[in-house]
Image (cartoon, rainbow, N blue to C red; front, side):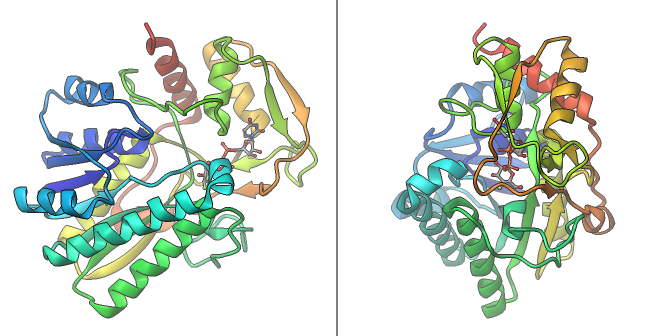
Length: 335
Ligand code: UFG
């Protein structure tokens, strides 16, 4: 199988490329390094001992994209090229809608022109908005997103449903990620947010390393066991493996639009995460209680049963491994 991976040098893209190469696929990566670094490509080679094709380009560049489809016999496409910062999306809605939605449309249009109809889309638990019920199953109500990033995911899901409706020879998997954390066990690739991190785990590791002074815990008055927000953290390598299973499903069964939650099914609070990190690494994480962050919800975790039953996929790595690998990456980077 020749798999085109847009955003393949990014955090989730690069971990998925490793799993694709390790399971014998031919890989073609597109990335413009707008939120990633060229060194990641060398790290992928070092980790897998395998080669892949690479094009440095914006995935929304139609002419360049056509060239990629001309030069390669692509069977399927995994799209990781979306912008993903919630806060930034509120400040730059046009940039987010343009990159995430127009980019996806250019990609899907080009796929159609070249008769490539297997597509795996990186969606997010954010499409559930305020959860209808917990744990979240795939048939829970979607909508009510509170930022352009989340809304772009919701819109693309709808676009994919409409495409499938118009032509059911497409094979589409929509994967709703919960909260990806951790890094490859080699410590050679990991999450590298630009500037001060918005997400919890990258913030925790930078407090533990001394790069940042203290964590602000956004609210301790939620209706949760300890008052802090509860999320479904999932190791990025487990998440990457979910994509391989989804691709296998599209190859085997074909002709369908499938939606899966990729999560562990277990919720941890912010303070659980701080404690687990301290216990695993032996480092102290200084924190203070701060006001709630606007747009946050109290509790969000998945019911991952559908992915287990239909894909044979379950998240295998526990919280300790998530903490260990996040910490290992930070220690190796920059040395
Ligand atoms: N939190 C803090 N302090 C911080 C950062 C986060 O207390 O400095 C808390 C948040 O309030 C929340 C929890 O930690 O309770 C997790 O926050 P993250 O920012 O790590 O993750 P979110 O659940 O807000 O959002 C993430 C991704 C989104 C995705 C969403 C899907 O960032 O892209 O999960 O559920 F849409």
